[in-house]
Each structure stands twice: as C-alpha cells, then as structure tokens.
Image (tube, rainbow, N blue to C red; front, side):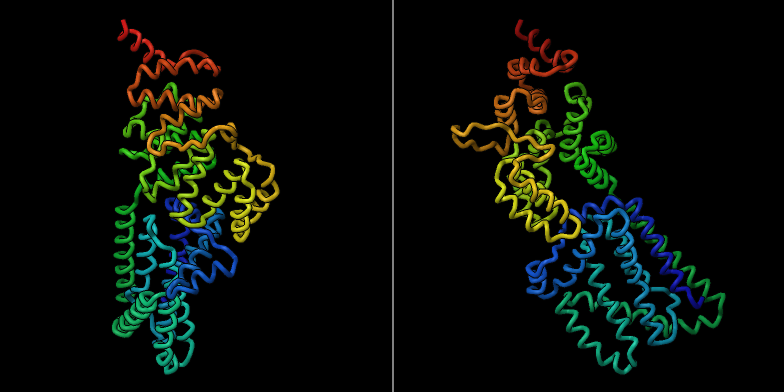
Amino acid sequence: MKYIHWLLFTALCGLFLFMFLDSLAYLFPYHEQQNLFLFSHAYLDTFLSTPGKLGEYLANFIVQFFYLPYTGKIIFAFILSLLYLFPVLCCKQLTGKHDPLHLAVLPPLYLFVQFESLGFEISWATSLFCCFFLLFMLSLLPKKIFYITLLPFFLLTSFALGWIYPAIAILICVVTLLSALFFSRFGKNRKIYIGGSILCLGIYAAGTFYLFVYSYNMRERLLLEAEDHLKKQEWEQVLDCTRKYRGENQLNDYFRNMALYQTGRMPYDLLNYSQSYGINSLFLPWTGDAQQSRYGHYIYEQLGYLNEAQRWAFESLVVNGETAPNLTNLIRYNIANGRPEVALRFIRVLKQSLFYRKQAEEYEKIAYTGQIRGLKALPHAENKKARFSNIQNLGPELIYICDRDSSNQMAFEYLMSYLILSNRQKQFVENLPRIQAFSYPGMPPLYQEILNRYQQDQQ
C-alpha cells in the first residue's frame, strides 16, 4: 500500500477524463463560450486591481483550452486530481505517514459533482489548486520553517485569491494530518488497513455516484447540445435534441422551430409538436432577462434582420461581457451592415485571444468589403425614416420583412406560423398569396386546412 496515493491519483485522472469525454462533454463548450482570456496588460489589470481575483484570471486561462476537443478536458481532469495528491504528499512530507481514511479524495469528488451545474465557477478549482500547490512546496522546507511561513502564506493567498481558499486548503491538510497521525497505528495490521481503505473508498464512490446521478440534468444537457448543433447548422441534430426534451421550455421550442424551417418541415409539421408558449415559441420577446440575451439574435440573423440581431448581440455583450460569441457576432453584423470601423474595434479585442486570433485576422481582411458568408442584410431605402422594431411582438416585424423582401421564405413561413399560433385566420388568408413567390410542390396540407376552414366559416 506504499504507492496507494499514486494509484488513487491515476484512478481519479482516468475517472474524470472519461466523464469529461462522455457524460459531461457538453459543459466544456458552454464554459469556453462564457469566458474569453486575452493576452493584454489591460485584461490582467482588471484582475490585479481587485483583491481576490487572481484565481479567476488563472481559471480563464485554463478555460480557453476548452476550445480544443481534448486538451482542455485533460488539463482540468489533471487539476482536479492534483487537489487530492497535493495534500496527501504534504501529509507524507510532514508526518511520514498516509491517511488510511483517504479524506483528501473528498474535495476533488465534491468539485466534480458541482461541475455538473452551469453555475459552477472554474475558479473554485484553480484557486484551491494554487493553495494546495503552495502548501506542498512549503512542506518541502524544514518543518519549523513550514509552520512559520503558514501565516504569510495565508495572508498573501487571501489577498490574491480570497481568504476562503487558503482556509479550506489548510483545513483539509490539517484534517488529513490528524487522520494520518491518529489512525496510522491500524496500518500495522495489513488486513485491517486494506479493509478500512476499501470500505472508505467504497463509501466515497457510492456517495459520489448517487450525488452525480441525482444532480445530473438531462434537460439542461439537451438544451446546450441543441444550441451547439444550431451554431454548427446541424439542423437534424437540433431536432433530435429537442424531441428528446421532456417538459415545457421556451428555449427548446425556439430552437426546434428554427430547425423545422431549416429542414423544410415548418409548413408541414408545425402543429405536430407542442407549441407550449404560443407565438412566443417562435421567438424570444425582450423582457430584460439576462439569461435570454445570449439567444435572441439567432432568429433575426437567419431572417436577415441584422439590425435587430446586432441589438441582441450588444445586449448580451453588456450582460455577459466580451466573450468570443458576442465579439464574433458584433464583428459579423457590423461588417454586413457596412460599419467597418465599429467592426474593427471588436476585431482588435478578439485578436488578443489565443484561439480566435486567426479568425479575427480573417475578418480584418474583409472588414471593408461589406460581405460576410452566410449573412444577407435586409435591403433598405436610404430615404426612408428610421424604424424602431417591436421587441415584444415578432408579428409586425415579419410583415415588415416580407414587404421589404418578398423572396424571404423564412419570414413568410414564420409569418404564417405566427398567424396560425395566434389563431388569426383572416390575416392568414390575406397573407397566403405571398406563397406564390416560392416553389412549393403544392399547397402545404396545414395551410390548405386552415384556408378551407376559413372559407367554410364565411359561407
């Protein structure tokens, strides 16, 4: 049992990495999209100017590697596992004994379970990692010097990371030390030592498994995966995720309806799915909800209504800060809308990142062309008065788009769906002739049914 700590460290690395590559893989793109690490003095100053923020700086540095399929997961699995190894090595260095209860395995397991929540802060793990690493390095010094340096260690790390992290690190080390000193005498009997270790580890494993399953949120996973497929324009996969979702959720309906249009099924299958929120299943009305601000631009971008898409992207920038999606969207929309100087302001920020620098440089080359692949701005007349969009109701905007661009099939199908879900048969029939601008193989059965019903009611 001499090397049991290395065996447990390896087992933890393997467990965490397996789960990160499988059941928890969806969380890594989410965290990467919520943070953007910049290699600039101004970015560093924002963390150094506020006590206790250095852990967040390190966390953002780590999170940027979540952009890569495997590297970020390997790094984070290694960091969590070291939260067990460092206090064990510190205990061994100070006492020459191992803790038979293996209490140091609890912090990484706890953080592993907490990682399931979208509210998990990576800085919790990175800050503890820094504290444990420093304690281990100090434990290599003579014992007397180690104890003398504990107070300066606590004060400095409290200032840099926040007092809670060194306090937790010292507490865990103390408990591990006391357990090693008190229960080490049982280690003389090999059977008792092995049996006790297996029993403790079995309890920890069973408790972790129960908490993991209890906390696992499949609906949350499906929504995040649906959004990820949406960004990649993998519409069949979006539909697959939204079908598996159980319960009512506006965001789920919102994603599904976009996928229905993109797969050519909206005029046929609209009512085959539960449109739980009525017309609000088609879009997200502006309510000031900070969480919704990052999703509202999708529908307007696809409709070509880029001014409104840009407004949503800017609201998300205000709420969530300079993240890669926000900056990228604002760059694209401003280029397509003929505002290259504004786009360049965001390009300069994005160029300070590691994995988005090349993309920013490509945008810089085309900033003055006004052309962005996959984006087509709604045509507008220069002599027209400024028009303010209706942020609470998509219907008037759809009519406006259809009037400005009669070839916009998405606007037409969304307008028809809007009128169906709001039960406005007369307006539906009045706008139905717009269908002649598109090459449908025949009148969609849903549209024909509503038309027949309206004609019967008029007789």
